[in-house]
Length: 531
Image (tube, rainbow, N blue to C red; front, side, top):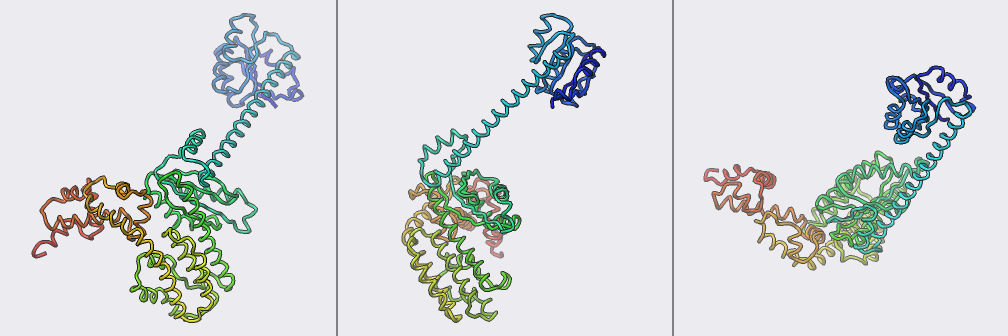
């Protein structure tokens, strides 16, 4: 029902209008009246009428002044002006103010009722038009969202060129430009008790992922299914992009699962320096998710089959095993494996279902990490099946450790093949750093340009082959040169900082203390004869 407010300085007119119309029968509400504009304003703002009927000639604040203020404060309120003066000037001013109707007094109840219905009809028409426009805007927005999401899907699936993708993205107001890209897949699985919440809860979890993970990154998403999203992460710093993804993998994932009481499967793709490489990152993320999901599902099945809770088991630290495989040697293997399995030995190792499951899980992790680190292994499924067949035959601790050594040898064969392929390239990069460490602008991109590969590819290769990042190698090279200069010259610390490539002496001092454990002054004291 529409609300009507009346302003007129003549009380007789106010009472006649108030009493001569059956407001409820006409589908209206008479919400108040006032003798002039000044007294009416606070009442109008309090009642928010749909229609304001006001006289023009009133003391203190006339109808035109009141109309002007109401139009600004309550633009949705329709105004009917009453006047006892048949003057064109009043009508002209009223039209300029956007007044809905202008009529002369006196006006009968039938005419006023007809006038009110006419204004109500206009209100309804405008409301319906606005509703239609909003609906069209909403549909257009949804259509654009779907088209934008399709574009992201086409990029991930390699169905569109970079030039076409950029052109289409610009039409949607999407910025695709970045120096580095990576694709991450998330697959949310709800508990049985949460299924009634359905899509709403999945959306809440995805929002939590976005907030915890993506605070500093540009990102785009496309939905592969109700519970699975593909995230394209973009940043101008490869290190920041890697750090953000790694931080969520280590901390954010567990936090999301604990807070939301869900299972979150992830797949992390490679970092790419070109937009066209997003497809390769997407494929890597799919494969990574497959391995992680398989490992997680197997672990749960093993627990269920053994009829034990998680706390009953002694675990093998998969991360520690993989880290040893990356950098360890055959000479170190025996002592490492003895230490690695010591908890099992001290707790009375015995063959059984859970032991088999732990080895299955560790084997999957070794193969997953091998594929992520060394691209040359592609057709290893047959070898994986061979190894898995050996697991049920493990009946002693010696068999157990022999199998672990077999995993080590297998991984190291991949590492050796990779090293022979990329050894010369890494050697060239190290020589380039040793020749240019003094330049404060030296970067990973400079080294990549020198050996004619992409920065992202070099970063991955360098870490795989040396066990340290390019930035770490550059820093250690510079600090090593600084140590030489400190021993062979009396140059001041800020001079040495500049000579080894650091434009900020304070930052150089901080790094020096972090690497050597001593300040520059403390190190120089050790060089004195009595030091």
